[in-house]
Amino acid sequence: MMKSEYFKGFFWIVYFDFIIMLLLSFTSAGKNILYTMYSDFDFNTLASLQYVCNYLFGPLMLLVVDKIIESFSFKKIFLISSFNLNIFLLGGLLVAKCQESCSVSLVETITVISSLIAGVLQTVFYVSFVAYINFMCNNSNRELFFGISFSFTSMSNILSNIIGYYLKQYFNLFTFYVIIVIISIILQALFFCMKDNQIETKKESRSIVKEIQYQFLSLYKEITYRSYCLFLGVLVFAGLMNSVIYLFLPVLVERLGFSGQDLYNKIFLTFLITGIGQVIGGITAGKLSEKFKENNVLYFSFVVNFIGILLAQIGISEQSLLLVLFGCALIGYSDSSISSLALIVITKQISTKIHAFAGFNLCQSIGFGLSSIWWAFFNKKSLTYDFSYLYITTSLALVSFVVYNCHILREGKTKEKDDLISPS
Image: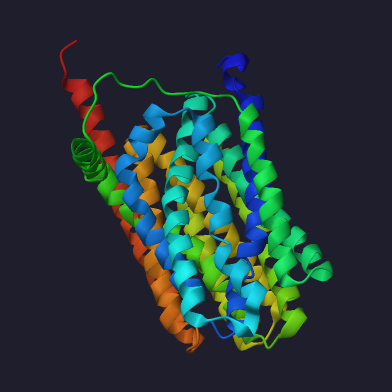
């Protein structure tokens, strides 16, 4: 392997990841306390409703996202689609402003509409994010670039809580959200300087209806490819794990008996520890998959997730914040590791087509959206239901991965046998 090939595009991918990291750091600082703030002002199911609208409606854009990536430069795409991060916070901005005097119907209407718009932009944003990394890398540095990118995005989970903690100490909730939105808009301007790696536009022109039909059939063909289909369980589970971070971990902290400013501080601490786990997961996923096969590292990530859930459950029963934090760190590790490894598996073993990334986004959105419905109904009930849900879904995802792995091994042996008996 030539060293020049290994580090080709390294500076630009780091610059791009740095912008994404800072953007996610500031906006996640606002997202991390949405559930707790809504609950404080008796909007108990608003966070789950917001995430359901955001993740279940947004995937409709998958029918046209390929055309968008083909037709526009990455620079333009990210300048516009990154507004999803600000728009998503409108509900929080409104509740922070009017608090107890909020009109429930007004808040829910604005939150739903803004979440739907944010969901549309979010789909374009994240599919383009993966597509940009894929087109910037080559076969010799694929693991490196994906590992770096997920490490940077995971780092935002550490920075967001440091930012959130200090902003919350000095500003009220409304000013807190205003500062976040203003800074994030300034950061978006940095996309003007990114390396633009535009995909060539195809010559043929199709009507909107034909374009949607084409994209639907292409997406359907990609995700029904046998190997991809067997891997769907892991992809949906990756989305479910994201919902655990935002909609379940704050509940764990609440159940430990904290309230008021102390509750906000402990939530920032919990997300900080979880974020450290996510950074380690992102870094080790790429590096370990270079040394060991990515499938084996993915098995290890599932084991870590089981242990994290168990420690969090013991921490709740013992009313031990330390055990809960340790469990959250392991859950954060597995969340980042599973997402990163899932993309590595797709690009190395299944497909590098844009529709493969669109399918990944679709599955994550389904996992997050359906899980948000679960948290809406069960977050105020006994945590036994929630922990049982996590054990069952983790087990099902693991079983689906075992099936996929057996298929890949069998397919590899069949190919090897065909190569041996084929005439020379």
